[in-house]
Image (cartoon, rainbow, N blue to C red):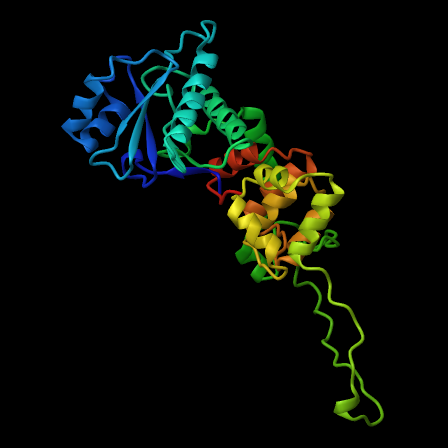
Length: 340
C-alpha cells in the first residue's frame, strides 16, 4: 500500500528513510528528535553539526547510522500561533520537501512522524489533515511507500460531526456476530427481517431439497452448457474502462501499489484481499450494489456483523469516496485499512 498509517516507534521502522521533526539547530531536542538522536548514536549529531542548521519548512538529509534505515531526513515544523502566521503552508512544505529529498536520494520508502503536533502545539486534527493531504497529493504523481507513524488513535481527532455520524451508523446497523450465530439480534422478533443481514430463530429454516432426477441417463452423455462469470480481474478492468480512467489513476486512487495492480491485470484468476477489492470499489466510486458485486467476484461480502463493513457502507451510502479520509476513520475505530 503506498500510504500506510501504523502504530510504531519511528526509530524501529525499517525503511529507506525516516523523517525527524527537528528544531532549527539540528542538534537534537526532546520528543521524536531526541529519540532519533539517541537511537542513531553520537555520530548523527556530528554530521548534523556540519549542516549549519535548517529553516522552518525546509529539510536536510543525513545518514541513518545505528537506525534501521539508510537516511534521516530532518525537517523543521512550524510552531502553532493560531494558524494566522502561515503555519499550514510551512507544514505542507515540511512534508513536500522531505518527500522530494527522499526521492532525489533514491528512497523507495519513508516514514514520517506527525510533524509539529507535539511540543510545537499544532492541533493534532489539523496536523493530520495536512500530512494526509500533502502525502496523498505527492503519491498521485510518484511511486513510493510512505508510512505515517503514530503511537495510538488519540492523534486521530476526527471532526465531532464525522465521528458521531459514523458511530451512530454503527450503533444502528452493527449486529454482534455472537448474536447472529445464535439467531438473535438487537431487533425484536416481531419486526421485519426482510434485510439479508439479519436473521432470527422465530421460524424454522426451509428444508434443503435435493434435485429430483427422473428417467435413466448415462454419465458420459451429461454436458454443462453455461459460461463462467467474469472474474474479479476482468470486472475491475471493465469498470476502469467504463469510468474512463487510466490504470494509474485507478490504482493510485485505490492506494494500491503498481506492482500489485500489474499482478491483478496479468492474472485473470487473481484473488485479492478484501481490503484490496474494496479499495478498488472506492477508487471507481461504485455504489453499494456494484461494490457488493465486485466483492462477490473476489469471494467476499459485506456484513452488518462486521464493524469494518458497516463503516465502508456508511461512506459509500454517503457518496464519500476519499480513501484517505476513509482510512483515517477506520484507524480511529481500530479497523483494518484499505489497500494491499
